[in-house]
Amino acid sequence: MAKEEEVDEIKGKAYDSKLMKRLLGYAKPYKKYIIVGILLNIVVAGLGPVRPYLTKIAVDDSIVNKDYHGLLIIILILFFTLLFQSIIQYALTYYTQLMGQRIIFDLRVKLFEHIQKLSLKYFDKTPIGKIVTRVTNDVEALNELFSSGIVTVFSDVFTIIWIFGFMFFMSWELALITLSVLPILFYATFLFRKKVRDAYRKERKQLSKLNSYMQEHITGMNIVQIFNKEKDEFKKFLNINNDYKTAIIKSIYYYAVFYPTVEILSSISVALIIWYGGGSVIQNTMTIGILFAFIQYTEMFFRPIRDLSEKYNIMQTAMAASERIFEVLDDQTIIANPVNPKIINKFKGEVEFKNVTFAYNNDEYILKNVSFRIEPGETVAIVGATGAGKTSIISLLTRFYDIENGEILIDGINIKELSKHELRKKISVVLQDVNLFSGDIKSNIGLNSEEISDEKIEEAARIVGANKFIEKFPTRYNQEVKEKGSTLSVGQKQLISFARALAFDPQILILDEATSSVDTETEILIKEAIEKLLVGRTSIVIAHRLSTIQNADKIIVMHKGEIREIGSHQNLLSQKGIYYKLYQLQYKEQELKHFS
Image 1 (cartoon, rainbow, N blue to C red):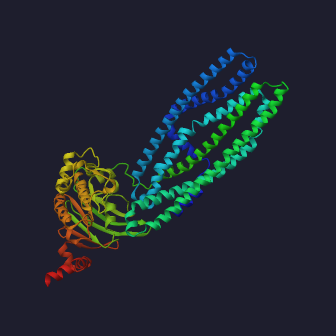
Image 2: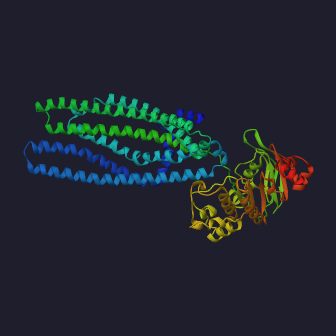
Image 3: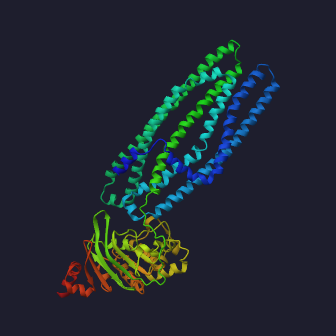
């Protein structure tokens, strides 16, 4: 986290042309919306400054001359100008917001699609809270840029241009007086932008830290509660939350100083206009209508300047957000598919590891020169102490990671030459920690696959014995499943995962500690289901309970990333090696009772 915070601190330019060009690429499909938006902005910007000029005409031509008919005409023109401006403003708001939402939709889809392509190595090193922040907060920050920044900034710019035009047309002397406060305003704006930029970086850093902390501790709430760490974790949360609040307040402080400063400068400008223009009116060198119009123009002039400062903040927010988003999109921690993938016409299920060496981090090797062969339809068990490399073998076979040295073959073809989709389509994995999604039981078994019918889902559940508890629910397979399957027992979740694996009808079945978290009764039920599942399938079983693997065709004993023993249950016992010691540890007490 410290490294991430340091990166957040030093990154983030006020304006990055490369990032902006890349962002605008997402707006390219909607250039018609942009063109329409710009045209509407020019119209809206022009209609605003018309009103003070109409006021000038009303005062000088109608009020002074007591021309009620002319005044009524000016009022009607003013009314229809406001009405037309409101209609144009409605269309402008609708089109810009619509464009922004469509662009954000496209970007969010692309981001999520890319995240799905990333290998597990990326998720090993990246906090989930950080990823969630990128897809939600950072993408939403870009929404303001596209809906309120890129197009509407033209409104502010053209409003200033129109105001300048009207002011110099009526009185260049008063126009110069109005502009006399601009040097101070420019300096104040420059200082404000610098301070806000720094404050915003700290704010984003603290938000990312807060999201990561929340995600991590809500996920691990059972650990927090079982060890009575609520007060300690609450104190940590208070500190992180307070740092985030402080960063936001700092940003608010600069806004609270800047906006009154603009108002003061606006008031000074108005005062100068009244002083100079009032004297000119007294001397009959200027009409009172021009004076009224300039007071209105001055107030209108400073409003878009304030808006432009806000647009700058939106741009700064977008630059920081886009930098983080593109950091994810540019991450190439991806297991690449071959350009011309090979196809296994008749899948047999033969698996072979040839001198496989693998490390998650640099030279910290988890597997060292591992070689073994699994025949089609054979059931092979892998045992060993924690950290021996058992689960890593499964991760490599499913190509969640790529190996440094050696080969992994299926039916004699290197898995790097196969499409990941086709490879994983042939494999089903049942893990110790079952991951269920919000939805219902049916969607958790079939994963909403169009290829799996309701009948196939129910048949899979029946074979593994899950139907016995599913059919007791009021809505059976439509029973609601909450996040992580919190309303189901560990055994029920495990049976659902077995039904899921079977529903996809795999040629290779992997059971990774699949029965270690269930009770004895459920384990017996699962063992009966496993016997049916293994028929005609190549199966790899990883287990701590040696009772579940005694009938395996072959048992591979792992120790510190190396294969130490291979053989059947009885054969390995006769060798009195590592497997024999594991067996002794698990069954010593039962054997003593048996021989007593």
